[in-house]
Length: 138
Image (cartoon, rainbow, N blue to C red; front, side, top):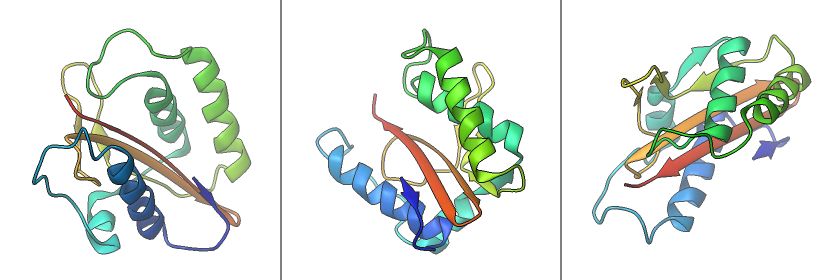
């Protein structure tokens, strides 16, 4: 999602999360809970630099959070797209994410949805905010 309306990053992440929860409701664990407000989303986010943002955008576009293994998409293509997004938003953009560790065997994040697995990277620079969210269930 890209927004020009000026909503806060936590508000936009919550909006995208709500859309994902609706689209994936058939796969969600019954009774699952997660953040419901932008304040709760904001508490789950941490700031990263542009290089880390490009790497996380690449990861989310290439790999599956639920079943790590072979790439689902071409990593080089995803990296070029991620680098372009970083350039378009500017290297001074703010980059919040809920992902705290994606090292082998130690995937960790602060939930932003009701799904078992989720990863979000947002970027805000100039007059645009971008949100990339991946959700999944096992």
